[in-house]
Image (cartoon, rainbow, N blue to C red):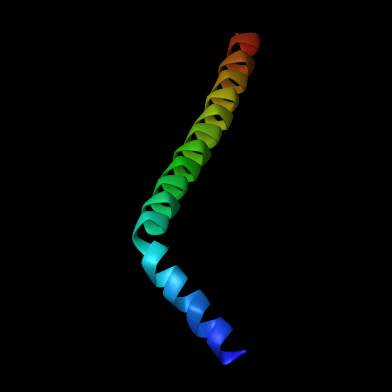
Length: 57
């Protein structure tokens, strides 16, 4: 059991650098997707406000 844990840790340690790069890439992509989604919602809200203002006139 202990040997399996240490072997897993060694594997993790060996693959940590490329793995870390991938994790960072995925985090950045997720962050960008979140920003894009929020921006889209914000644009929709602004369009709705503009439409309401136009209708009031």
